[in-house]
Length: 220
Figure 1 (cartoon, rainbow, N blue to C red):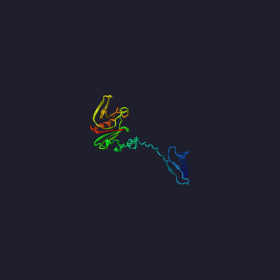
Figure 2: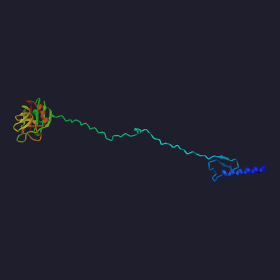
Figure 3: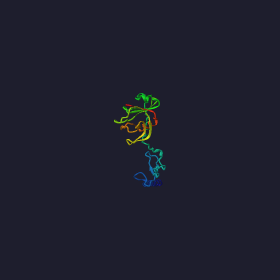
Figure 4: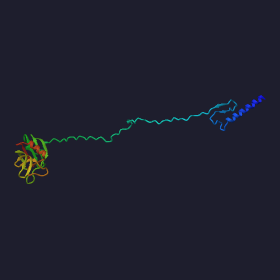
């Protein structure tokens, strides 16, 4: 009888424990341990559900406090083309004057300085000892009715700034070889009244080169 009571008490206690711990989902509402039975009839083991705490740490965005390197910014390049150097012009080489082209035999044969005037070609030369030292340069002689006389003459005098009273006209760098007829600065498009018109540069050359007594030959 005593054994029977002990067995009944043990059975009642087991039923009470089962009723307090059982739930439909197989777990404990309060988060307690769950008794799992071994299907093979072995011992039961109790395992607590693994809980993972939510992570409260979050990766902070990385910010750079340093300014961007200036070396990474490409420098602007100049798009202007370099100027092309201009070629240096070569000096003009004039062929040497040939005395054979001078049509004045007396001027060529005269020692010292002489001048030759060719009325037909409108050219004139300066010579020294039969060699051309200047020219040919353009000249313009007297017009029709006032033609420049031909022949061999000599320089009589020179006047730097002569003014013609007869024609009321300036005659710079005048070198006279006949009365009233001279080499001087004048128009190279308008014929004269008998004088030999020269450019300003040529008349200056004739004025400084020719001296009193030098030969001047004029040919048609």
